[in-house]
Length: 167
Image (cartoon, rainbow, N blue to C red; front, side, top):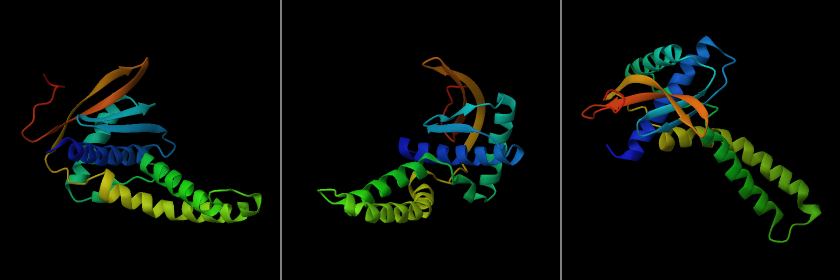
């Protein structure tokens, strides 16, 4: 499996894990980031709870709950909205913006924001995540530190690969 596909699958497991964590704590506030070895979670969650949620998320995805791979608060949603509203504003204002075009820009960016939600969900479903996690195995949660910020990393192993978390 290539690196991009591995990140897409880990991104799906990350989303599913956040769904499971949110079921227990609807006010949960975390940030996640997938990589080739799993995914990082930044926020107020203890490692045992995170491990349990990741295992449950993976089990549920492997049993057919592929919709868990998509999350409404994913960064893909923000990027999609930013890109679509920027293009809409540019098109509405033209090369020489005039104050008289401001209502057109407001309407165009509002419509773009409205379209961004389903577009962002579709981008997640078909581009930035993958529910194809049958060959995945959660092997642990490790504490990481980057630039003085501590976070947890959920280590994921794929069939036929050796996890650095266990070495």
